[in-house]
Length: 419
Image (tube, rainbow, N blue to C red; front, side, top):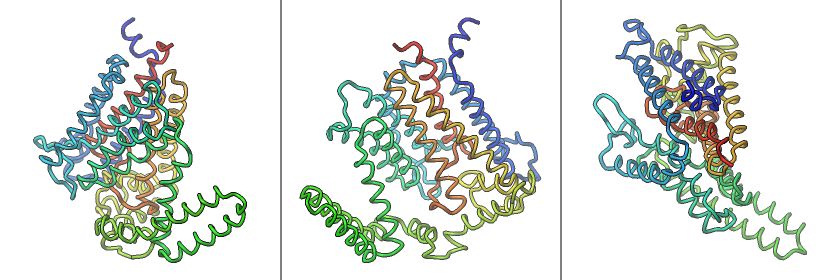
């Protein structure tokens, strides 16, 4: 009993409770999303809901093993784990199987494993290890570049697998750098570029450049006696013009045709209800038809008649909206928000930098998935194909998120032994 208590007495059970609530709700909604009258048992292993309980079982075993391991293991082997996952990302480019247009899977018998899901926690570990090393200062450009290399190396490899959605997840780790001392100005640069990109698509380069020119002239007039400020404003204007002009090239030559169409549909530049806009259109119908209380379990018509493709994976939230309504959807959102709030609290109470940085990496990765996935289903973000954590069908994603979360819970449980 003493050994058992020493392992589990400092574990944050609130987070574990929310974790299993989300998994249970996800499993029930996967059952509803792919329900088949010929396979009514929720434990039927020929169906996705039957397979999901297997993934849940293995995820629980993995979580238990993570808690058993010494917390020092994760810091000591951070770079080793990172290198191993980078190796897997390289290997899948050579020997992986292409599924839904992305060559990012290893096929093992009847199961498929996606290394990109495991690279997320490995990258968070490596970043935490690097930032916790002595004399690392993110105001030093060399240290910042090294941190950027850690973050964007797996992202580039995932892009090469034609899985842009998963690659975008790594960008959220920039906010971790900001939390650990990176200049806020550097944080504004990617955000500004993203805004210029969006507005250029919406209104065209000439309109954006005209607005930028007017704003720059106004600011130059205000700061006309400060030569350094004027120089900075003009430099920002020139760079912004370059970014705006580069949008057309990026849009036409870097993004795929399906990605261009999805972005155009999102911004209302195209209407394609039978093509790129079909999933989102049907998803919004499903969520809207649920109204306040929902249609009831297994009574969703959009769900029952398979109007929404990938409804058990990327679009699982529309099942919640249709069958459980606004109240059920709100419950899911609130559970996630409580989880994020609790994780931020845990991250802030850490006594060592490694655990704190990793904790914020966990929050960032989970929040990005949560926000973008739900935004996709209601038409506020382009469809980039990322799962809802602990909710969507899939072994790789569930295991990846479980490892990501439980490593942090183990680090948090060990905080009292750090002085």
